[in-house]
Each structure stands twice: as structure tokens, then as C-alpha cells.
Amino acid sequence: MKTISRMTMVAGTKAAAAPGSVRARAPLATPNRIGNTARSAVSQMAGAPAGRVVVSRRRDLSLNAVYQDGQKLDRPLRVAIVGGGPAGACAAEECAKAGIETFMVERKMDNCKPCGGAIPLCMIDEFDLPSEIIDRKVNRMKMISPSNVEVDIGSTLKPNEYIGMTRREILDDYLRQRAEENGAKVINGLFMGMEQKEGEKGPWTMKINSYEGEEKKKVDLEVDVVVGADGANSRVAKIIDAGDFDYAIAYQERIRIDDDRMKFYENLAEMYVGDDVSPDFYGWVFPKYDHVGVGTGTVINKPAIKEYQDAIRDRAGDKISGGQIIKIEAHPIPEHPRPKRIEGRVALVGDAAGYVTKCSGEGIYFAAKSGRMCGEAIAARSKQGTQMIGERDLRTYLSKWDRKYWPTYKVLDILQKVFYRSNAAREAFVEMCSSEYVQRMTFDSYLYKTVVPGNPISDLKLLWGTVGSILRSNALRVSQGPTVTFGRK
Ligand SMILES: Cc1cc2nc3c(=O)[nH]c(=O)nc-3n(C[C@H](O)[C@H](O)[C@H](O)COP(=O)(O)OP(=O)(O)OC[C@H]3O[C@@H](n4cnc5c(N)ncnc54)[C@H](O)[C@@H]3O)c2cc1C
Image (tube, rainbow, N blue to C red; front, side):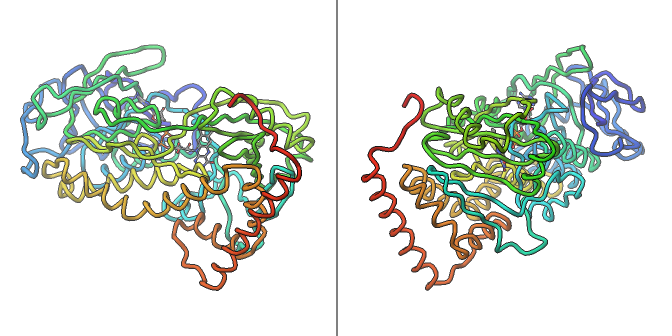
């Protein structure tokens, strides 16, 4: 990965690859480099090959000027994106493509974000992802109820339809490289904080601990606009006082199983529901490159997460037995958007904004999409980086986002409340999944991210069937005594 990891590096020298980093593609011929000293401006050298940057030790006065929103600039707009996950990389790509001077700050270039790595089919086309970064094409799923009733789903899929399984270290690296190829300057460093010394219309001074091997350097970077793409624990969100969200804690073990067992999961993912694996979410076994990801999550009983993880391993049973745990990972998953997602010239995207859907816990596509939409708004409203933008301009991204995705979030929120609330409801949910109509609607909505118009007669049958399933399951629950619960509640 041709990252910018040394702020004092001179143009033309080769950046060393971060140890252990995964190279998705060959390095660029002319990598974007930043040679910078504290408070000096990084500027593009006139006539230099595309992507080359040189150090300007002269303090760029125009950078410190106070610009009103909409005012014409005598230099390109400068945008800093904090975080190089899907949200940050896609925001950076859009800004850089528009000719905006774009900086992407990422603390760990080989970051392996704790994640199931499942992405919808539409993301592959929409984000032009090469097939090499898709480890597995899942076209069969098993939904497994609390009483271990298995329902196979996937029969409604067309031959070329699948869920893509990725490793995040590969996907993120690819997206970051593409942003860089389009002109974004990648800074390998930890964003520490930022301030506006000249008031709310002045530039942001970003404090960054930059990394070059073992070396750590404090660097100031001055920019006009900041995009917070730094994930669920976003520091940018804290700085703009964006407020909190409820969150789930998700836990995953990467388990290497033998070839025969791996063959079983070749194109198959499993979802387990039940009080034992989670009181309010689901447990999963997802096939990855050479192992399976086995995990679960919960909002309402976080201290018991390891007990739920034991339970999901037990449920998968012989299918993963003898496996070797090669990695354990845990991370918060936002449950809803933050109260504030924009403040002045700062916008939040991806997990930092809180864009993970309930019920499925899906966030990769929404992160990439929100990053791209925010980048597009910055490019359009700044007239390709030639004029200053303000809060009203950034809000165009927000209103477009909310119009497009609010119904999706709402529907999944309701589904989670109805079907994950008790074992009886979960039995009904799994039973309902045996309906071809439900499978087609669910897959189409997931794979293509469109709310699929239903057939009124089938919808009525479905409603009737659902009520029937819930009643049957409740009756069963009463006749069998109380549901078994797990962990401290
Ligand atoms: C266990 C688990 C399983 C999941 N499974 C799935 C799944 O199968 N499918 C799906 O769609 N979603 C899944 N998700 C959700 C998904 O992982 C997130 O929604 C997605 O990663 C959000 O992308 P992002 O770019 O917004 O943030 P992130 O991916 O979190 O990226 C943030 C980036 O910012 C960097 N960063 C953070 N702070 C700083 C700083 N101060 N300075 C510099 N850099 C910084 C980080 O290193 C990171 O690279 C899962 C989540 C978890 C926890």
C-alpha cells in the first residue's frame, strides 16, 4: 500500500509498506506523498505529475483567511476525512475526483475491522469492486430457530445473484488505494483533535500524530471542511458534540476448520436466533476466505456477550468442531443515527453517523454510500472545489440520505422489535422464512437496496401466516413452560 506515512518524506521517494499490510493491488507509479512540517501548508506543485505533492514551507496565507459560505476561493477547497474505512475512502474518492484537495487520515493502514464482511450484490456493481476481493459468493442461507428448526433460503435467487463475503483488510485497502489513485493524499496517523482558531468561518486545525514505522510525529493540518468517518467511537463526533447512540456490542471469532467442514460452508451462511445466542440479535456463521466467522451481538445484555458466543459455538456444534480460533474481535455497532450529524463545516458519515440497520446489523454498504453521497454533495456545492461551503451545503447530503433510506431503517427497526423479542416470535420468524414470497422480498431488498413493491394478495397471505405462526409459537411456549434464558439480564 503506497501510504503517506512520513510527513517529512520528500516527493519521489518510495513509501515503505506497513508491516503486515495486505496488498490488493500493485503500488501506484506516482504515489501521493506528503512531506509536511507542522503548520506548513501541503500544496500541489504546479506542473508536477498528477498525484505528486511537495512541501511548501511557506505558510499559505490564503488558508488562514476567513471565507464566507459560497465565497470564491483562490485555491482549491481543502477537505480532511478522518478514517479510511468504507465511509472515509468513498468520501475521499469523490472529493479528490472533483479536484478538491483531499486528505484522508487513517491510523492503521492494515486495519482489520471486526466485521462479518457480508456485502450486498448491488455494492459490487455500484462501487465497481473487482471479483478478486470477494472471497466467497454465498447463495444459500440457513435460518435456524431456537428449537433448531432449519429453513433453507436461497432457492429464489437467480444463478448470478449472491451475497459477497469479504475480508475487511482487503476491501478497505482496495477502496483506500482507489481514493489515492484519484488524487486523495493519505496520511497514516492518529487524529487527536481539532480546533477553529479564527471562529466558525475559519479553517480547522487538525492535530495528527503521524506514523512512520516506529517514529511518531505531531503534525498540524489546516483544512476548510472535515468529514468524520472514524467509526462508531468517532472522535470527530465527540468534538462537534453530536450526541450518543445506543449500541450493540458484537463479538466474532475467526475459526479455521478442516477442509471437509469448510466445504459445507463453501457458499452457505447460517443465522441462528434464540435467547441462548442473543436476547435481541442473531448469531452467525459466515464463510470467509479460509475460515468461518462465528459471532453474535447484543444491545440489552452486553456483559453476557461471551456466554452468547459460547452458545453460538455450541449451536454450530459438529459443523465447526475441532476448529482453531485464529482471531477474536469485538466492536460496538450503532443502533440508530446520532442526534446531530452535521455541525458547521463538519459532517459525519458511516458508523460515525450511526448508519447501521437494525435486524441485520448491516453497515458496510451504508458506510460506503453515505461517504460517497457526502463527497458528492461537497463537490457539487463547492462547484468542484472552487468555492467555500457551509452547513447548508452539507445538509443537502443529509436530506438526500434521509429521503432515500429512512423507510429501510424504519422497516428493519420494526421487524427487529416484532421478531427478536421472544423465542416464540423467533420460531414464527423462521417459519415465515420458508415462504418463497418472503424469501424473494427479503433477498431483493437486501441485494439491491430497494424497497420491493409487494403483491397485495401475497402480502395479505403473509400477514395472515405471520399472525398464525406467532399464535402457534406462543401456544407452544405456554404448553412447554417458560422459555430458557441465558446470561445475566
Ligand atoms: C462483529 C461485527 C460484524 C459485522 N458484520 C457486518 C457484515 O457482515 N456486513 C455489514 O455490512 N456490516 C457489518 N458490520 C458493521 C460494519 O462493520 C460497519 O458498519 C462498517 O465497518 C462501517 O464502516 P465505516 O467506514 O463507517 O467505519 P469503520 O469501518 O469503523 O472505519 C473507521 C476507520 O477509521 C479509523 N479511525 C478511527 N479513529 C481514528 C482516528 N482517531 N484517527 C485516524 N483513523 C481513525 C479506523 O482505523 C477505521 O479504519 C459488523 C460490525 C461488527 C462489529
